[in-house]
Length: 115
Image (tube, rainbow, N blue to C red; front, side, top):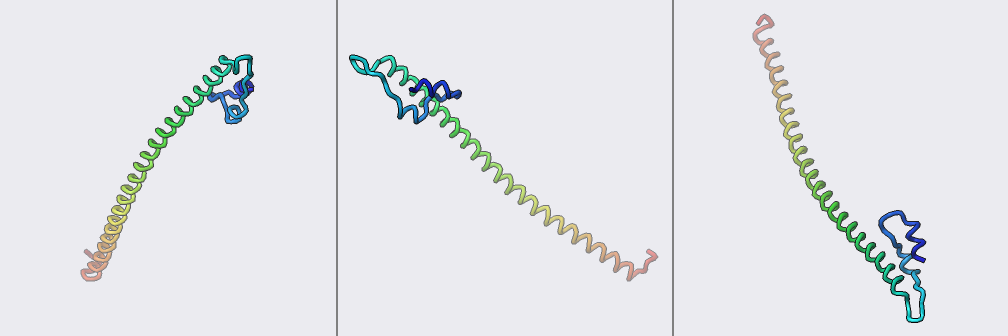
């Protein structure tokens, strides 16, 4: 019976697929008991409502995370560009330092070490 499944389920979702498939209603002289069917359908409606809320929340989360990934990819591209620029500048600076050292050595060789 579905009430057993409800007692075991501590979350907000009340019914499992198994509960839906195995649900049986007692038949009285006029057919199924309307109160029992209504109560069961109330749980089905609550579950579907909760499923829809979960789906909407996950879709919103996916959208947010997708935007965050896009922003982080752009940030990575920007930082890589900055790194390349810094490496080029660093290379130029080290080349300039090397040139200054060579000029200094040449000046010493040409003018002597007194100056």
